[in-house]
Image 1: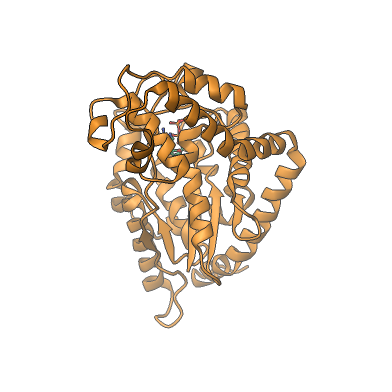
Image 2: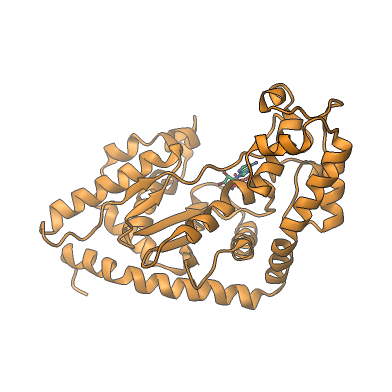
Amino acid sequence: MRVVSGIQPTGNLHLGNYLGAIRNWVRMQDSMGDGNQCLFFLADLHAISMPHDPAELKRATLEMAAALVACGIDAQKSVLFNQAQVPHHAELQWLLNGTARMGWLNRMTQFKDKSGKNREGASAALFTYPVLQAADVLLYQTTHVPVGEDQKQHLELARDIAQKFNNDFASDDAPVFTLPEPISPPQAARIMSLRDGSKKMSKSDPSEMSRIELVDDADTVMKKIKKAKTDPEPLPSEAEGLADRPEALNLVTIYAAVADTPIEGVLREFGGEGFGKFKPALGELLVETLRPISTRFNELLADREALDAILARGAAQARDLGRPTLDAAYGALGFVR
Ligand code: ADP
């Protein structure tokens, strides 16, 4: 089994990114049996498909790499790299552009959503980005790709491209590409703003009090939790009692996700208690859980050499793993090299 998964680099990482995305990768890595392997990459090449700020991209790429390592992505177990250091991704995309059909790309709903009314003004990269995604997985003979609902269509496209390429340019007994299968990522918590239980916790919320950031120290975490919006009622003993209480539900959800227990378990312990008791308990749990992560995260961010070395090592491994498939694709297409 070889699993490949990409994440867009984003900066100002917060608890929502950790519980909703990064921790899932660590779990995937740790659930791989012997002989199986995960490749995790930062999808930095995708950034230019939308308007972007180069300085921000650089900062976000380094931050995301530091966060992944701090949260437990282990270079001894997995391959961690950013696309821009593995030119094979862009090369293979070009080769696959010859196989992908305009009609297939025209059907991609994400392009329609992201280009909106401004189709003519959208970048060509936004249109061909699903072909880069196909290259991202086909390059490594990937057997399984974790995909949420929104990415199912793009994985189907990758399979169609692989199938057509194999049919057109390879013999049945020596296909160039493996057709990857989708797997469902582990269920992830959705974390809401600490100021408004109906809004997602997000880096773009103007209020820093709305989110716990990975760089926050213990005092800041405690303060943000103590000031989090709540209602005057005590916590219920059953989950149904949280139905119309978005802020209470959010804090209980955070506790459950961090403690890795069901919501019912949290309510068994705290049902009947007010927030005067629950908030300090939640704050302490968060501080204890985040302390090793934020310590390592801040250390790595302050040590650019260490971070560069981690990414360089992962990229070298990725180039070695991708090289045979890229060579086979060039060869199948008749290029003299
Ligand atoms: P933001 O909303 O802060 O801009 P991004 O859109 O950059 O975050 O998301 C990066 C990753 O983190 C995505 O996989 C996304 O699903 C996850 N994520 C972001 N915010 C949350 C949240 N509040 N709860 C759960 N997961 C989240």
